[in-house]
Image (spheres, rainbow, N blue to C red):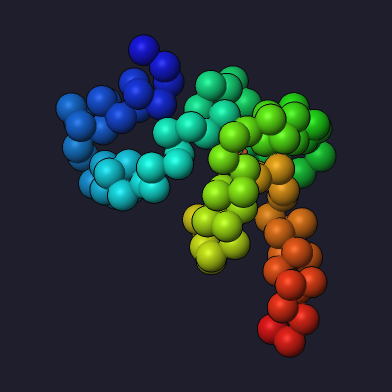
Length: 103
Ligand code: SF4
């Protein structure tokens, strides 16, 4: 059983964390194909100064990178933190400004 599936069943068996359960049930279908699911050893919320090359490599080969980027660009706040679609939160802010200079 992979890590993502294990977490899913843990949330179902111990639904004390309602947010996690709802979050899992509410996830878009493309997340099932996310390459990061196969890399539980990588932290996609890296701290400052952490080498992000392994994350960029996984995202670069991910079959749903475009869907991931579209999804995260619509998110705001804490959900939008971390490393998504091969980009850090800072890089996505820069991309957002580039796409929408008036904002
Ligand atoms: S592109 Fe998104 S879904 Fe794919 S590996 Fe990177 S963070 Fe995960």
